Length: 55
Image (cartoon, rainbow, N blue to C red):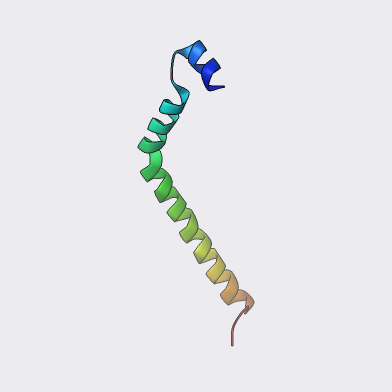
């Protein structure tokens, strides 16, 4: 796939992919953290409302 992409576009697909990944990593990490925090809040509210794991 990479060779055919390079033949057609004259762009190194792997280098381009990793360059874009490096550029977008901080944004992806913050998105992932927000997603985890949202799930944590949702789980805590679900556990407290269901009475699950309470003494």
